[in-house]
Image 1 (tube, rainbow, N blue to C red):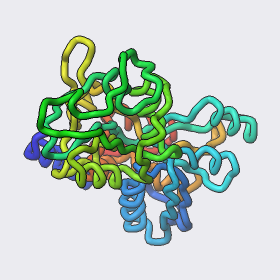
Image 2: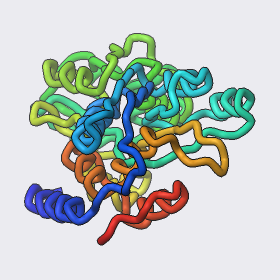
Image 3: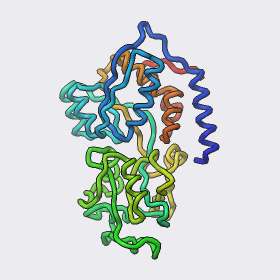
Length: 315
């Protein structure tokens, strides 16, 4: 998205946030909000937590960003009521939770993001098909490629020489799982891929090596790398940017979720309610945009607020 358009969008969202006011509380919410889950969402959660503490000085956020895979066990064990995840829960994770509590976890969509394939800024590679990506990152080529791709000479002429250095996320990451499922056709990663605990570390590794390729969240792009378009079977190039993610045109777009332990028919406790109220407000969505994520459509915000019994912000 051009910077001028992005700035205008932030201005509109922030203007809306001035109009929006927090609900009237019988008693000011006080307490610590503990969350366990996604590393991708860590910066976003912290910014939301800072704003929450500004609105409600007696509240603070305690964040454990161990990866999306850590959220379901923590929710099931009862050590947290809210688990941020950058991927959907698996059926096994849902079953374990429901077996413990007798009802399913509640999923809230709080922003949108995308997985982006990145190369060094001097690498001229512009696009890759899914079979090519699978041949680079997987050990099984389930997406249909005939041969593994190990050297840059198989993709581009002359500019970059030598073997491809592969970088990705570790196995507890929702980013790792989504890439495996969507890009590797549910296959397995090559064992020689360098795994990193966060997307920022992946981008930094790729930026330091012209022979490197990796995948990361959209909001972690820097001038030291450049994104690679996904080439469809029809030859159409799909570039990752907020506009294509918002429209649903980019194949590796994803929802960012909060999974909540909320019994049917009950309201969130005051501390968690105040946090969710902020996230699903114009101000909360402006924070998401500022950090490089994609805000939710207004209808999605209103629908979730109504389902949770939150007051609708004035527009």
